[in-house]
Length: 221
Image 1: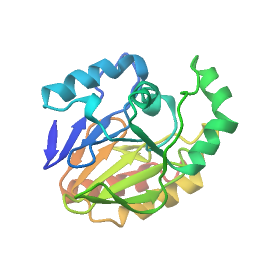
Image 2 (image 1 turned 180 degrees about the vertical axis):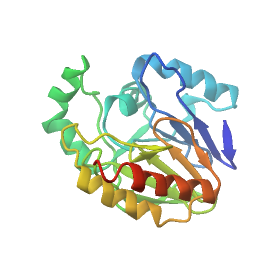
Image 3 (image 1 turned 90 degrees about the horizontal axis):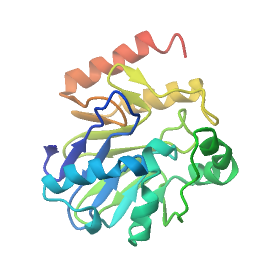
Image 4 (image 1 turned 90 degrees about the vertical axis):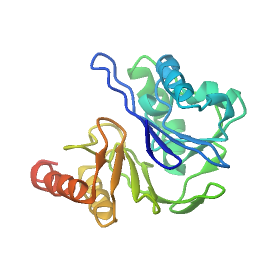
């Protein structure tokens, strides 16, 4: 689903299986964000092809964080020679805690190398420049991506429509999550693309969602 020029959003809408939403940015550096679970990737590939996009033509895969419902499918994409990007704190998480964490879910840590470390600052994608924000709380290396031109925030599992990422996984922190949410609330956002659930469009709707999160969730985090 095209939401802005060069920006596509693929929400995961099944109620019976957990998986992440995915985001595609087209242009000179074709970039897929959060490809999701490996066994569910054919669903995403079908939707991409319907929009004239091909997974085989990707240049870069970005992970907002290292949990399996966001990055497991990257194993097969890496084998196609597509570059992989993750925050260094989550790469450390994968090597130290990842094996036990994935095993608890009946999975194995994806077997591929990280080619690009996502550190806070500008991320050049050819004719587009996005801003990387380190927003831990759900995971140590969670990142959000902000694209200034369409005023779009790709929020991973930091914040959803009327919800926030859980903090009871290893490396999670309620205090830090609240700090990260407050930082993102200061941005000028017209499109919020979360890691799960529906997108939010319109500056006022996004602002109201941040206010709701602070009112409903901050007291219990």
